[in-house]
Amino acid sequence: MSSRKHVLGALVIKVWNVMARIYADKGQPEEVISIYKAMFQYGSYPNVKTYSTLIKTAAKANDPYKCFEFLEKVILKGEKINSATLNFLVQACLSSEDINIQKNTNTIIELMSHWKIGPNGATFIILLQHCKNYEQLENIWSKTLKYGLCKNRQLQEEIIKICCTKLSSDEPLISENQQNMENKMLKCFDYFLRFYRISKGEIPLGIYNTLLKYCSMNGDIFRSMRILEMMWEKNLEPKKFLYKNLFDSIQNNTINNRTYTWRLIEGIFSKPKTVKLPKSLLNSMILALGRLRDVCGIMEFYQSKIGLSENNNNHCHNSLDNIFMVRTNNIPMDIKLFNIFMRAVSECKYGPLSCVEIIKHTPIGLQPNHISVKYLFSSIQTKKDIKLFGSILFEVVIKQGIFLDRDLWEDIIRNTVRNVSNTNGKGDMIIKHLVNEIINVQEGKDLLNCLNILETSC
Image: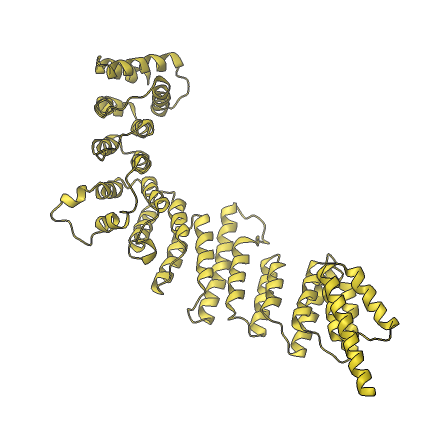
């Protein structure tokens, strides 16, 4: 009889627990508490599962005081709560605005350790999500060492992600934001090297990607290449968009940046992910060379793309421009790509002849447009350029049969005049007169007259 009563009692408690869990899942903490109180009224007594549901419900309602009240009852019964439930309590404590409640997080972690049920990876993910400064991050890292979780890959990734993207330096602004960024990167690299040492070089790909993304965002090409070459040594590759980000981050024309850029290009051309180069990556690569004023590199790639380099009998089969041609076969030489080359050469600021060379070697079937002409004329840097190359530029436009309406010509010439004279004070009447002369040239009239007006207007 007592055995039957025991089974019936266990069944009744199970039913109560199921009902409590249903209301908990619906987010109705008041109903869960009502069931808890009703159990006593009907002669049933809560067990560990009941208290686990109560703690989770109170935690979701951001009521850590209730959580501790129920946890105390479990401890007094000599029972244990599972780590998943205690993680809810950790979350509730860290979400509280009461500093004293927040400090109880350490007590919960010690309780997990005492019960030999944690802390686990999920516990530390919660801690990291609430991390506010580098001091707290270092404290969390110390705990991962203490509890043997320092090799946990998910935690390593989360630490790097938090370090790179979330935390701000506690130190006052020293000189500029650049100094803070540098300090931040040093801290992130410090953690990276710790992981590298502890994991004997077996770093999760996500860590490399996060660091690479952050370095490129801050224009740190030196560290970017260091990370990238470490990846390549282990036959790893970043996400394709990170290659593009790296090229986009290269802004200053320095010897080091040129060296790193060509190391990046050579490395990319030897990797499987870029057997077929994405068009966006190709565009970024060419424009980066333009910012570095590497007109030779741009022209080599342009000649390779349109097939001129094949005519060179001494051309090595495995040379870089030949590999470039093979890996960009999937990208058509359309007007957009043509104008990317024009823009890059124009930004080199070595004068108009390279732009003229590109237009003279326009692929068959491709017609340069007003954007091409815009980049052609933006390559004019001085009045001397107008005297030396003005006739060549106009002749190229005319011979290529590029006809622009008056508004487009006005815009192009106005920008050219302002670029050369470094002033915005030129009257629109002069510009309009100049455009009329250019259109007259296109209709077969005097070219020299047009050049004289352009020169005097500057």
